[in-house]
Amino acid sequence: MPGLDFSVIPFDLLVNIANIVVMYVIVRMLVYKPVKKFIAAREEKLNARKAEAAEIRAQADELLTEAKETKAKGEAAYDALLLQGEEDAKAKANEIITQARTKEAEVLGKADKIIADARAEARAIRSEAEEKAADAEANILENARRDVVDLSVQIASKLLEKNISDEDNRRLADSFFDQLKTGKGELK
Image 1 (cartoon, one colour):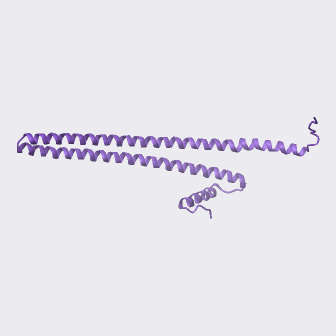
Image 2 (tube, rainbow, N blue to C red):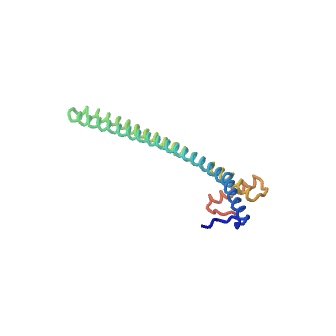
Image 3 (cartoon, helix red, strand yellow):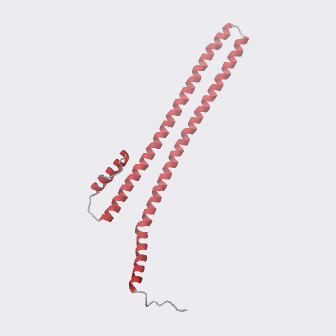
């Protein structure tokens, strides 16, 4: 069984293989791992903010459920009083019927007020929760945009090795994102 003859393998091939291995290790340590770590940290922040927004929304939903229960109790109380009024009206004379109608009107007013107050409170709570969730989402997106711009500037400056001021880079990145928001999506 003939063995490998290493004297035939050109020295340049061995040097090229060593260069490839060294370049792979350097690129992995200097670029891949930091970018992966940065992305994982941003994802963790985003998940935390999403969880916070979900918690706020759950609290709003819980308050809305409580408001609905209060409404149902008010309506049940109203129905009970109305039934009692009808029974008293059948058992008593016209004077008691008049008093029952007066009480009925009062109860209706209170029930409507309770229902209106509960609905207003639920709307306010839900609106506040939606505003907080929207603000949190806007902050997350703005922070992500800033981080992407900063990272893009760093990568572009390394790749181009050109002296462009931070102001020019930020203006260019902001212009790009503004065009994306308007739907053009291309640089001029």
